Length: 344
Image 1 (cartoon, rainbow, N blue to C red):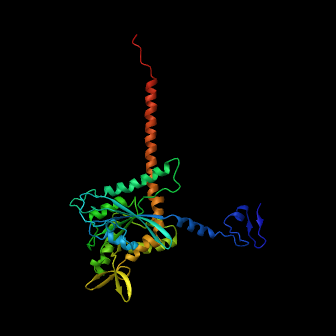
Image 2: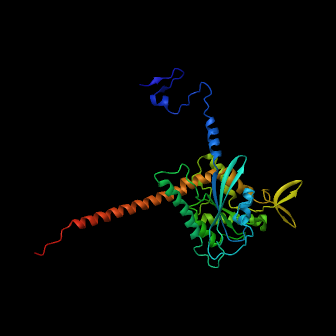
């Protein structure tokens, strides 16, 4: 039976009284301390982040990764007397580091793809990359499926793929389009214009617009995807990022003295290109996206979207195979029960 609220003329049904109410607390409970608990627990183990860099040789992939994390983390930087060579096929190479900043540890794995786009015939050069990404999903799926699962499953899945577009100033090449068309559904792709200091500001602006047109015309959805915006605040933030993609970047691991300050930059006879100055290039936008604002979201989209899609497809395949096997077994059993006709 409905009751009347003594402070108003509105009648309340039992459902009205219980749904959506936030009771006032009589005093301090300590719910906010949950965040401190989560932080302490998270800081005991290193966060995992796996980043893949794809692009032809000479576009500064290793240098950019070093610049992003302000340390020598690329495979090229870590191998003494490293010799640059052109690979006949795409060979994926990985290297991992533990980076620590203010007590927070990050286990960073960098996956390089030497040989990509370096041949006269680059047909199917994306196949080893697709295979690697799916192998990491399969490895994670197997760990999830065992009876006695590990408390913390090692995560080798690729959380982000930075794709380096050569600074031609024209349009996306067929290779760029084919690669992104095949990978955007299985990994988060962030396209960048490499060595953007070779373009004038006008050329850079026109090139960015042409790249966006090419992506749209070919139905390629790069990170952050509109369909994964959770609310209006996310949409507003991500719209600003989408307006700047692809990022025009310059990488360097060398510091120079400018107005009494040490800054990362590339020195030319015209002056110093400051890597972290947004008036010079968009490196800061890329760093903020990958590390400061969207690192966890990149991992979430990888787990809840790309990996989940792979997991569902694999389970459906296994169910289909199981049904087919059961059907064949039942047929064989029925045939075995039939008695042969007597010739007597």
